[in-house]
Image (cartoon, rainbow, N blue to C red; front, side, top):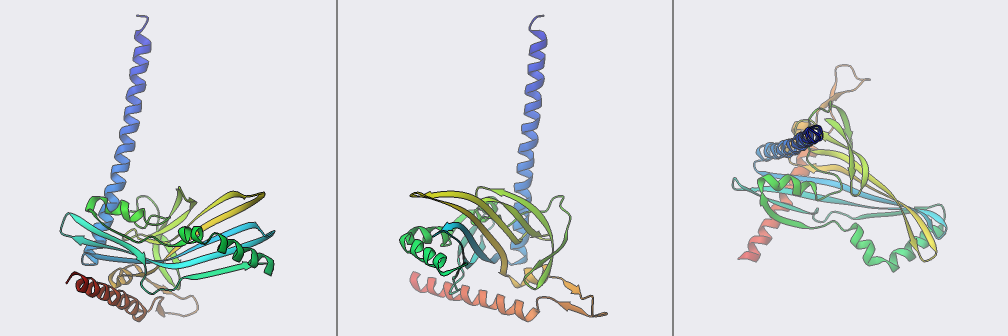
Length: 286
């Protein structure tokens, strides 16, 4: 009888732990399945060829560059494409949108700070490129793994299924989308992201991280922030998630915030680029 009670307690503890682990595993499987379902709906809507392009801006604040506060940012368009390959696989591609501009800006409270940045960037040019060049990617994966791959391409996951979050009006550029908010903690830092309620597409998000770096005898406090905002997408998706907003100063007048013409132009440009890429690929193959 001496060991009966401890053994009962141990057995109870193990059962509780197993129950918790089972619930956690089921939760992860449920989330993964839900996100896969979100991708399936997107592929169905876009006739098995999903194209999402984001404006990605990385802003870095350096506290003590040449004794000055210096801020620089790098902005680019990043295109992620998922193409169905039969019923079992998906081709995931990601690259900077063809011929899009790379925007670099630097600001400081005087020219010494600007000069310090230019000197630093010239001496660390390779490192500067490694930190800011968006990665090209082309991989064929099982459909069940496609969302995980897509979500790993940027600092913020691009597809997330809504669970219990409430929906509200989310502004993006000059548009409004019915979306929900999610707090983020990733390897790259912490922040917040907004997804549309219908498909779970990332509308906009940001991640920031504060670090301290020492170079020689100088300590630099660096705040690194990455922002993403949906910039282009399939016409079917944009027409489905962008809604009309009634202006308070105009009675009975409904205004489509993103004009259909602008949507069509953006989508036509995407298709034009894809057709060009296919022709070049066909020419190379031939």
